[in-house]
Image 1: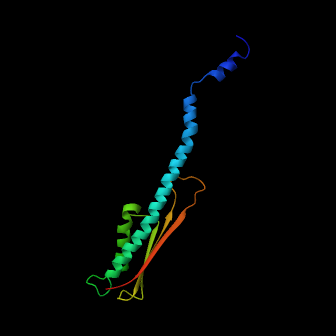
Image 2: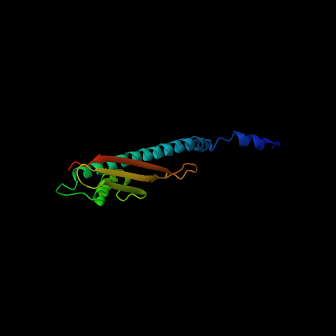
Image 3: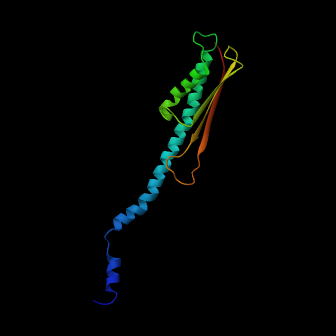
Length: 143
């Protein structure tokens, strides 16, 4: 065998090239797919908070002190969690709901419902910070 013949054989050997090409091309595609999922989850959370506060404030508007079943702050918070549950889950962690009746729960007063949530990307990619999402709704109590 001539000197250097083994080196040429190494460079001509094509076994494993498909696996290497797949690894090189699949990595960016998987990162792109993960980014799309993260953005979708962020948008779903951004949708859930305003939906929840709107539903909770609307509930408080029609359940003022003069109604047959006046609403308390705890009941209004429960309406928020019920409205946001399809997206945030049944027991969302990191969500804070605040209900304020200004000055009280009587007709003509204002109800303000606000929610704040911390969104942490689940992928764990270094460099993506946690975000704070917030929503607020205020209405005048009618009943």
